[in-house]
Image (tube, one colour):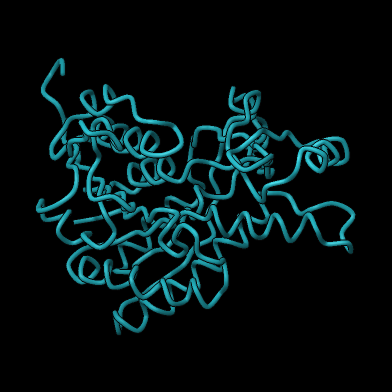
Length: 307
């Protein structure tokens, strides 16, 4: 079976942890333990989040006095793909001896006219005071919005249209390689309508929607979205909270999940199942093997006609 495994943003850095290299190196063992059993049985593609790492590089670049301007998000996103990719390659190499493993820098094409560019909502980087935020907006042309602790930069999160390297990923899988790609939703690029030339853009593509598109393009049999909760829940965080164990895309969409948490994961699973007729599931990282074997998580399956 061909699996696309989407690691949550907390896979290398849990909430409240310092973004030190040593912390991420320690956490990577948990990730590879969860994935190794599946990789021994199936063809595997791994995608991953990069929120904390991108935030760290953005903060460093903005504060660097030797730069005329901070590095653009597409290049910083590429740096996170390389950093997280090498951590995964080295640890998977140790637990899967003899297996070909490749980390691939991956670009995601978005539309230049995507409405998301007019309504940036994705927070990136550190928290600023109102005074500092006003200065950054003036000096760098950033858009900033109030977060729970202060002011942060917000950028667009356009919909992924195409993974540039999808065919390369497909070919690597056919050779038996385990592939790590599409980190952080992929490096966001716009394609020139006349020449096809790619240009980076200041955006962050949702990692789960990109994983769903990638899974579709490489003809995966199963999309596994791993996060920090064991199931999707109705009425999450309330006394009425109940786990959803088995559902269809239509039923899942009726859950009304928040955009900043379970919403993109639910939509990604629903899209993949609708477009391919294959299966998707959402659940906890430590239960990855059990989820694929239907013993944990929330399974999303094709609905009946008219569902």
